[in-house]
Image (tube, rainbow, N blue to C red):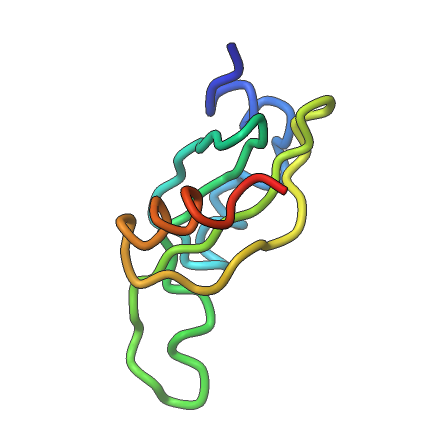
Length: 94
């Protein structure tokens, strides 16, 4: 079964320290729903643009099941992990 380590190994440039600092990512999780894989990220990305305060939020990226490549963002910006879980239940998996 695929785990987060497999995704990290398949995307070494995505998970560099420089990339993590640039996007202000805090933590990563691998999520599954209806046969789809997602990278869940807690991040501060872009929230402090134009002088705003940094704000932790959560985002999902698709994971290609064949190559494990990290793909495009899906879903809205989430305020917490419970919102991510609810979205995956109602919307996740096409």
